[in-house]
Length: 205
Image (cartoon, rainbow, N blue to C red; front, side, top):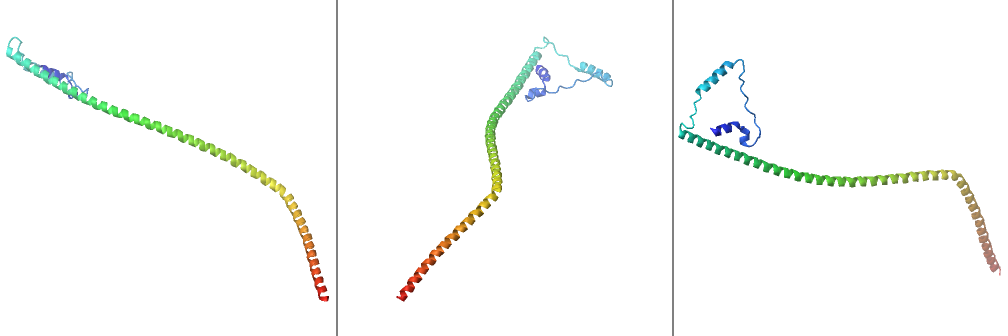
């Protein structure tokens, strides 16, 4: 019948609608040396046992039954193809949804990548500014160290002269202090003598 002939030529996976290609049945090797005679005998038996199809004009009822059977087979084939089409349509819709979800995830990942690049750029700028400040501080520290070394060298060179001058100043101050003390002592002594003299004269009178 037509349905059996058509469905026999279709692969099992194509009818189910999930896989496009299926393995075809391997052809039987007729040239096997061990089975040539058996194959020939089997083919002869199959030819003899195959019933002869009635001719179209011999039996109208047989023709009608065959046509009706072929129509049922075509209906079943159309139904199978419709199921296959609906299965592929559903699979396509699910695939499309998955692709849209993946595209949305890709968009989000690209946004995250852009934000990370901006943050990384900001961090690089901050690191460069910190590096510049460190270099400036290092230069300032180097300059201050050089000035300190120069000051120490000058201080070391001038220390003997300063000590000598300080000693001279101290001696001068000590001398002036001693002279002033002598003057103060002389004035105090004169005052004391004057008071004593007034006291003696007063007693005498």
